[in-house]
Amino acid sequence: MKAAPFEYFVADSIDEVTTGLADSGEEATIIAGGQTLVPLMAMRLARPALLIDVNGIGDLQGIDLLAGGVRIKACTRQSDALKSTIIGERLPLLAKALPYVGHAQTRNRGTVGGSIALGDPAAEIPLVATALDARITLVKKGNSRELSIHGFYQGPMMTSREPDECITEILFPQWQGEGRRGTGFQEVSLRHGDFAIVAAAAQISVGEDGVCARASVALGGVSGTPFRISAAEDALRGTMIDDPALRAVANAVDQAVDPQSDLHASASYRRRVAKVLVERVIREAAREAANHAAGDAP
Image (cartoon, rainbow, N blue to C red; front, side, top):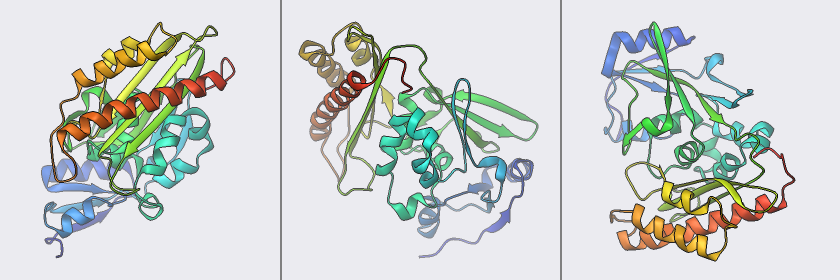
């Protein structure tokens, strides 16, 4: 199949993007990597009247270390993020997740902002963004706003981005001064590089006494959006991350997860896998934290 007819515009600046979106409204779509959009257009599941190409805009590319965290501009290639020493050192949870994102060929074209904007509930980058409380900057003609990732996803591939808005950057805040930190990421998929049937991510910090001071635990693939499991985080804080704490976490996961069956897996399978993966990522994060010197960056 081939795409329905459309107009194509190569933007040279963010202003040109926002002007095009304002003038065309819901008839316009931004294309960066196009790893999902192009197949959808080929199957005519997406029929934009105007494609606005943002690949040549330098202001939408790059990774910066800021005082409050790491800023990834929206058109940064996933392969560049994977190779980034800033992300490797400062965002190890994202560094662990990126090899699971598609394949080398798709990561060479796919962008961090594109994955965030699409909002696939099984995608790895939105899951990590949820675990790390990322903040998203959206720009439209004459205005901009910043949103928490927790208010951004409304359902499967549904976000609170307005039709005339463009994502320009994502800020991943860093945990500050909370002891030794560790991260864990695991997923189950039909093949490596496929979207996850279930994925889990965790970041924890422990004090010198080995007691958990802070925890973030998130799941993808088991709901319409990636989500944090606050009850599991509460069950870890103040503990040595021992077997009783992990049993409480498993119970919290069981209460929080209400998956659906589909062609790839049954609801009961997803529920079982979610508990197993959450325990694995917590144990992985705890081991890593135990091996880190106090004050290391997460």
